[in-house]
Image (cartoon, rainbow, N blue to C red; front, side, top):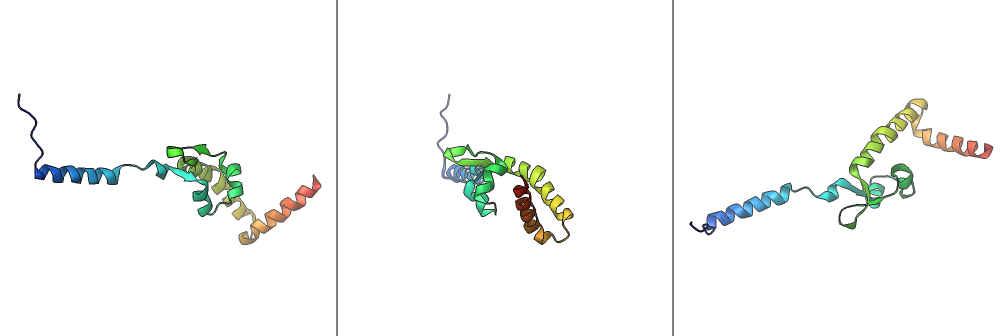
Length: 111
């Protein structure tokens, strides 16, 4: 039986090129994860994250947060429909937040 051939200079180039392509194509698990800071940078209030998305959980390499898919699901099934409802319910939607805040504050005094 013959021994395996020693890699030639041509093979070294090929091995390096294959490694470069693999490095570019390998999925980074961090891309599937939102940290608290990621969501705050996206415009969410830090104090609202647990109410919106639940308690953060540990992920890859000790990262703490929420999966991109769970955040997307909540945004699509809860937040977007609520936004659309508010938008259609108030004629001047820019003032809807102020209107809702004053109504919620007024209602809380009744209870």
